[in-house]
Length: 281
Picture 1 (cartoon, one colour):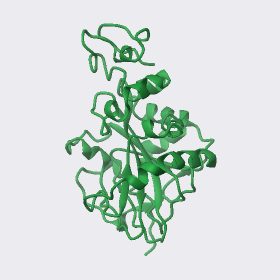
Picture 2 (picture 1 turned 135 degrees about the vertical axis):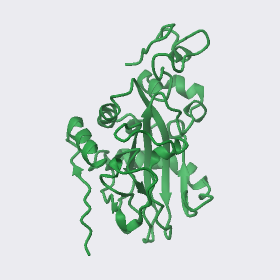
Picture 3 (picture 1 turned 90 degrees about the vertical axis):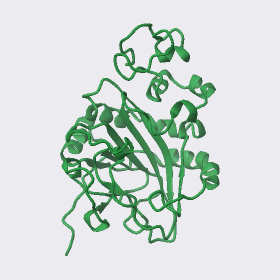
Picture 4 (picture 1 turned 180 degrees about the vertical axis):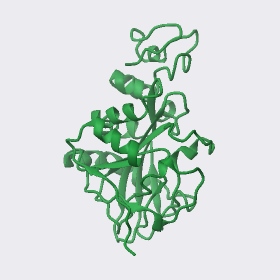
């Protein structure tokens, strides 16, 4: 029987409001060809030395024939253009608008090698100790940029559209999912509550995706950006990127330094203010 599942694709010219509305309805959406080819090339060239030096995953979930390379802000200046892509950040801000702030959650290049089986469908928000957040309260937006073409054959990320409204800790199979097939430079956006997983790579080539996630400012980051991004690199970043990686309060009284100093003052003494409150734009 042919699958009736479908995944919405929108053009790169789509408005953030429309993309966020699709995510609210379906939990996931693909923006086709949002990144230009030359930018994708630059990111891959910068990350390649680190990617080939990364060991394969230690278990089935992380993938025994899959490499996962992080610390992208420090290692790939070009990747910052995608991490802080205006359209993506606009969508994230709308999906997570119920929280005071949002921040960068993780950066990871994922290279699925030939022969890797499909990953068990899961929710990214299970990283928070499997806490069951209230249905409809989103705490995370995940993105997967296609650094190579994503196809059913080479392991395109598989999604269960609409599963952001489903019960927690359900078990889905690969047959319950649809592959996010998309051209190189496209990006899949999905909420942390959507069941999804890496697809099986039945091709003879490596499938590479760049996984960039964002979460509400009052939750811990999955990738510790303060250690992944050396402070000398952090100081060189534009202020909006500094705040995005965590040098900002997560809410009224979260994340201050010492005597209630604004965390941005660690990098830019003139930019913050003392006391409680939220100062990031």
